[in-house]
Length: 163
Image (tube, rainbow, N blue to C red; front, side, top):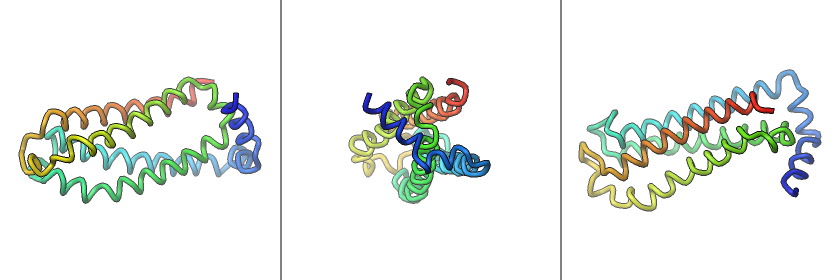
């Protein structure tokens, strides 16, 4: 019940009301959210596709990661802040929305995947960094990442269709 009350409170705040009722604020924030997602998932996909051996095969994984990671974090910040503002404006509606709940679970899993990857497989990157073939566990992390982010985007779009 605490979460429901928190969502109701967020929904009723002046900021939530202003975003929701403005003819420009919500669409603008939503557009920024989509751009943040594009930046985040686009850069993550490059790393994932490198791990799968589809693109940048001659580039070292560590080099690809080091060049892309700062841009990925920018996308994450943009996505997170804009997503939170969108949630804030419709928190009460999101609370009971099954697509929103699925999206949150998928976001959690999509966030845990790189954490686990960096704490395990990526620790030994020096041993396989220059290889044309990445270890199977690295390929699995890449494939899982692409799947989780795709599912997260689909669930996010489905929020509008479940009331």
